[in-house]
Length: 97
Image 1: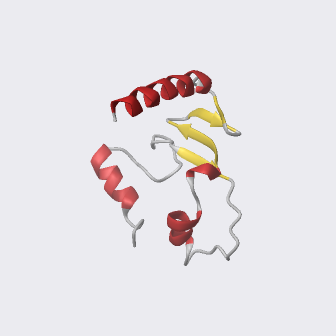
Image 2 (image 1 turned 90 degrees about the vertical axis):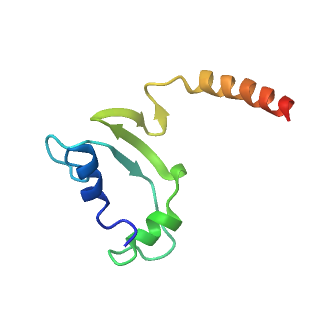
């Protein structure tokens, strides 16, 4: 029930088809590498999404038809630069505490 109807709600809010891979629909997709230790079926898929899979399982990300991450490699961002800036910002934040 947690995920049921979300695509219809989002489609209504955005004024475009969401939740389907068809021409004209928003094409945001992730591919995950998820091998659960328990059975995965239609009756428990929501529980696997909520409790089993995590962001660490994401292998590929496609937004608006553009591949942003492929095989866990960011294609449009400089991860090393972002991490360096984050470390500097984190150090400044901790000094303020």
